[in-house]
Amino acid sequence: MIVDYLGEQFVIELKIWHGDEYNRRGEAQLAEYLDYYNLKKGYMLSFNFNKKKKTGVKEIELEDKILNLISEHSAVEILTQMQNYMTEILKNNLSNKKLFYR
Image (tube, rainbow, N blue to C red; front, side, top):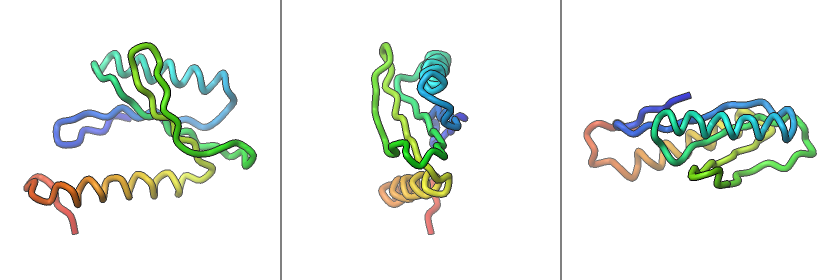
């Protein structure tokens, strides 16, 4: 998924957890997308339905790229985190007339 926000692009790869090897292929895929869009930082959201798997955010370097890996059991939790992040961006940029916050 490509999010274009005020002219800045963010690459977000969405995956369902199917093990470490599948996850590594997703990381490589994300790095390829970042190369294509000439970006250095990207995000991979991994929906993990294995309750024993550790959740949270991890940042790794892959070649010259920075990947933020987010693993959660609940899609609602990920969407809530994204909503909170976007709300903070909007609140911190109230003077920008291109944004609208209520």
